[in-house]
Length: 456
Ligand code: SF4
Image 1 (cartoon, rainbow, N blue to C red):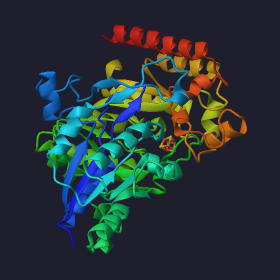
Image 2: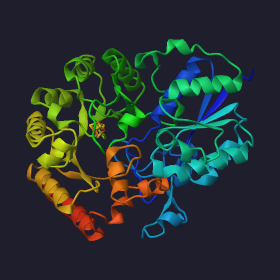
Image 3: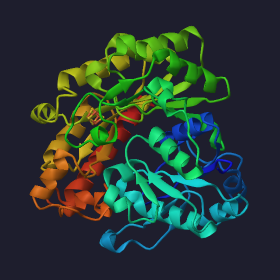
Image 4: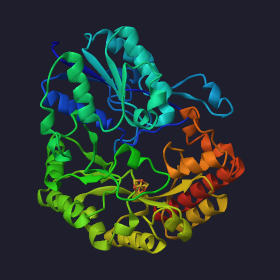
């Protein structure tokens, strides 16, 4: 049996563009907390940590550049564009800490007994591959497992990246079983039967906990045909609101100023979930700014809830509009309607939220979507006074929309995951031309500027 020293790795992002919107490897940090609870010693190599002391020293800064809420840009190192993406006229690169800083850090660390590497978007896999290579170069033959979103959605492709094993699906128990097998231990697996049995994510493994992510639930009760959530988190499970409040209070008491809810369905069952959480936040006088980078379900947002959110400290709100086309709203599962969206927007204004705090996601590039639908959706949100955030569609294996794209010949049945890149996909040009996409971007930008100018 070894002494149980486990290295967790959050890889770089390789892409044309990336922005840190409170990005945190929440699944990996939850695994870290479970491993610690079972007596393991855990360390995090976070290639995306903008607060890392060596990075700040190189930048001659005391804090990373970005918004007062904790979001901002990662350093970018230009890399050769992969052959598959050679037609894209943009600079490809590695987002995150420079390679030499990561290698220098690893040079001082002892050999771990096992390494757990996580992964994000499927088309970021070159950053995962690079992280695995760097770890393997430092410790040849070390036991290494790969999990996370990409590993779950594309397990066969993930198996080619050099890990000893791919661990698809929810991470905590998979990781604990594998690490036990590698180290010759037997943990108390049976204690983890429900979400509330897990300890909170080990945010303290990161260099800064000024802003953190919070998950009050996993999964989503809706079934939109473009979404990966059912493959990543089957079912819908909400945590005990009291445990969520305890987590918020714990980190608020340790200097965290901004918390981003990464729930897929934060407003579902609000009377016995979010409203209970917010009552406690207000009752205890917890002072935190909350953000919802994942869009909220507008149909579930009424004025009473909007007022409660404002009182509790919600600072930035994103609503999932996706499309203003009522037929499409129904055809994609009915999570939003025009009437529900208009009611939600009116509720936010009545509660005192301002134009600068609110935004609506409009989806661009779904298989079969024509430019006019996206343009009308942008115009609809702007007419209600809501700035638009364009969400470019990314094909996700195993979803109905992906199957439609393959059936239409817009995607080969088993393409390189680089083809899932939301920058690249619309350029396939099957349903929208590049000129139409640019026109949608211009329309969104002009309308947003007009609204924000009027609201200033
Ligand atoms: S409501 Fe959102 S999270 Fe749920 S299935 Fe639809 S897109 Fe996915």
